[in-house]
Length: 286
Image 1 (cartoon, rainbow, N blue to C red):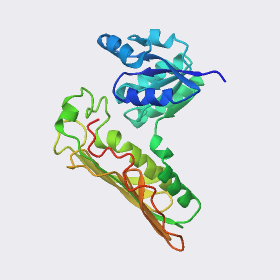
Image 2: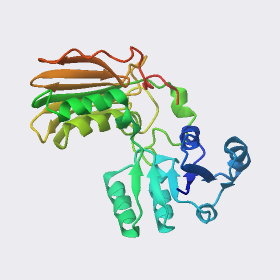
Image 3: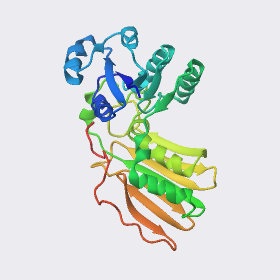
Image 4: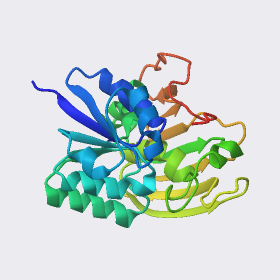
């Protein structure tokens, strides 16, 4: 099998993670990067060991099968469209874009260009989370009655001051919910299913940003269950993200990617694989 040639749009900190993952893939190879900043070309080439281009046209002229979009959220759409127009498949860092309209637009665009479009929601692959999915899918919890997601994190002012785009409406689409909360909210919806109505409130109470640094919502799910979401980047000192799934036969609680409680009627108690939080970035400066 021939290798999949991969190019990355962006040279920010997340690219280090993508590079590590690509290096671990026998069937994948990083071949090029794109940065809009000409001044970053040389340092990026030294850091990643591949050619770096500061024009999108030059970047896309390379023999690339898959483009990973890792630039600012509000510029995802233009990068996705450019890659799709060049016949490249796309894997985009979350979120696909900053508004539902823009997201629908890039999905339709990629369909029209007959290229595949994916969004990076890697928390679905967690071992403990897969056990929760299996328990719910096999009916162990019975009828679902409530699902809650809490992403009560903290970021200091420097986190936003050091970035030209984080916390802005144009390029972040908001703040705590769309940036930090998105992965945990995705897991909640993946388990609980479609939502029929939402009542929510967001506020900016601590940070000097356009987007929200605290938010809360009440959800009605299509299956009849209800739920809540809380999220923030102003909640010192920051606590591991938490998912609570309640059914008529029991409940499962996860924190930081690990199952913390497993209480299901007529089912043996689950023994967690580790007491450590696997993936929480509750107070991570990144």
